Image 1 (cartoon, helix red, strand yellow):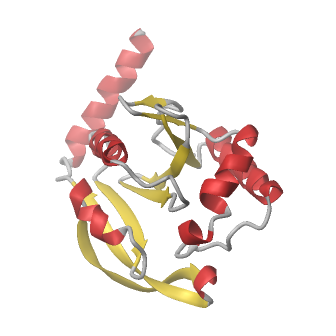
Image 2 (image 1 turned 90 degrees about the vertical axis):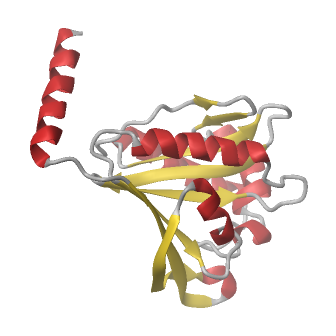
Length: 203
């Protein structure tokens, strides 16, 4: 189980984030998981059917139930269209995010996407016990140039990090990006946890 429990629903001025539901499967297939341009550099094969996407959404729901990982669909408020997904997992002091951006026709990323991610990352790095946020991006993908704009620093290249089946590669390289903050002395961390526990009991 994860030490971080983020909110299931997140609102910004222009985006609505929530866990994907089974009813979202047709749109998620068209916009994300079944779109060859979107899945080109992902570590799993492009979905071949809506049923495959629906099963995937079921596994994402299991992550919320177990607390092992958390995922959201990103929906434009103006028209309700699904434009991407955000996933969070890890173990303190390190957390990792994963992003899938739709490159399907008519679903180009907007400034609202960048603004939401910056707010989410600011919230995450401010959580007690979180001192590092990681993200891995394919060296052949389109996400890497975007990461420094979110505050990430590129730390290096991880060789043969994951499979790239949609490029016919059994293993491909990834850039490692990170956001970090200075760790507290251990005594201060313990004291902070004790204060939070006391506040919860008082409530």
